[in-house]
Amino acid sequence: MNPGLGYAALAYLSWGLFPLYFHQVASVPALEVVLHRTLWSLVLVLGVLALRRQWAWMRDVLRQPKVLGAFALSALLLAANWLTYVWAVHHGHVVDASLGYFILPLVNVGLGFVFLHERPRSGQWVAVAVAACGVLWLTVQAGRVPWIALILAVTFGFYGLLRKVAALGALEGLALETMVLAPVTLAVLGWWALQGQGALVQGDAATLGWLMLAGPVTAIPLLWFAAGARRIPLATMGILQYISPSMQLLLGVWWFGEPFDTGRMLGFGLIWTALLLYSLEGWSHMRRAAKP
Image 1 (cartoon, helix red, strand yellow):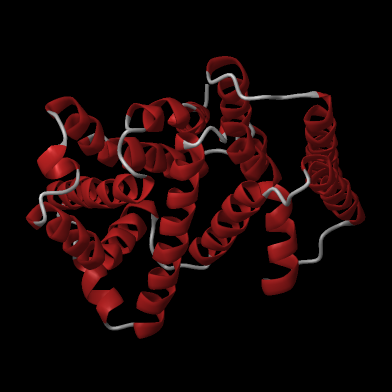
Image 2: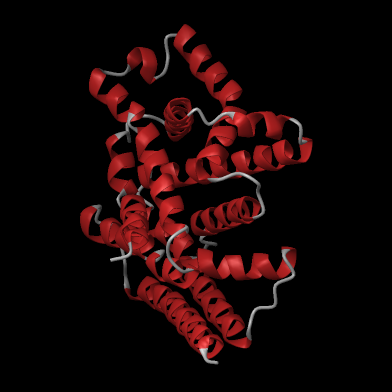
């Protein structure tokens, strides 16, 4: 078996289990969880870079203000995505969060059209239209816009767009992003500690252990993802990416007991239909392109 398939599957399986991890730190406010996630991710990636003596890229980046600016923006998008996701898990919206990652591939089609001047094929536009109908139905059915899903899809969509054109790999990119966020992270955590607040001074050993685990929980799947992406076709990655939201949906319904009535099922059904159309169209296009 292509080892890339295993790496990619491990990454998506790990992301699919994220609700279980963040449920363990539900007693800690979402913002504080994100700050710890940033801090311990930075500690881990700096440790990996030190072991590999992989520092030359920093000197090059410091000479390129545009690259620094792009990664500052991607860091803010990543932080917003993390904060929304953790808040969603803490407040019983795992199903809504899964919806965001179901529609993410179709959001990417629109972003590619607007910012990269890509020309989606007619079948892809049909898939986007069907997905839009699904989101509209969920909005009407719930009486409100599915803002959690839309924020997750849009923030990670723009984050992916920035990383697509970025000059750094997964490890170096995550290191730079967490470095950008580190001053605020350390300042807020330090201020809370001085005030006798926050998990660093009030949390028990188990809570602190779970928060420190956020470093490897964040960084290791990203490294698996990068290793897989280099070894298998993009179309295969496109199919595997549905593992994560599918697992999150199942956890939300059967583990956390979130409602999933007929109306919501219909909306998700439209989005799953859009994803099926999108996947079949991509597979068909690849087969036609491969013919001599």
